[in-house]
Image 1: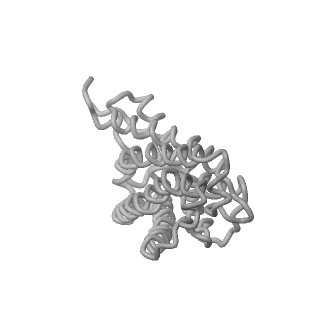
Image 2 (image 1 turned 90 degrees about the vertical axis):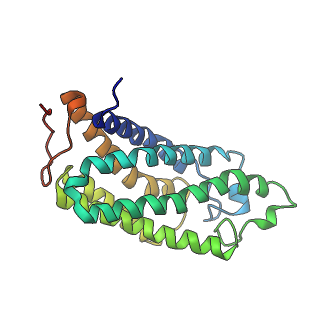
Length: 231
């Protein structure tokens, strides 16, 4: 099989579409106890680390697919899209991967051992180590800002339907709001806007490449159209 750009677009699209239900399930199952999602009672819940493994798997799939999706819309989103993509990717690595790995493989087992449970932060930040808290805070703010920028870039480009960009930007705005952590609700707030937006872009890519085969090309700047085959 020849590895063509269109094939990579399709693989990336499949990856982000598959990531959505994993992230949504992980977010819905993530325990929240007394308004805290990262306390000893929440981390030591019997269901753990299943939600964290689901979230980590979904995040990995999402990050594998996002570069292909960005390449698909890059011509239309311009420099704003590039800045949004780079900041989104880097902040996701720092805020999501580090958090989920520590949560699943360190904090959960530590929370179940009385000898190590004291390591878990009492302020819902997993750890009380100041550099880690600072990294999570700064990366989280950059992550939210990048979603807003990416959404604006998509709206301006018309590379995909406008509602997709609006949903992406709205997802970043919602994450900035001080919404209390609640079982199930927090997972919906975090995962649905971003997950739906990326999955929708993925479906647009799959639709275009399915109709035009592996010769499909990305949309031209300023138009949300199904691309025509190259000749």
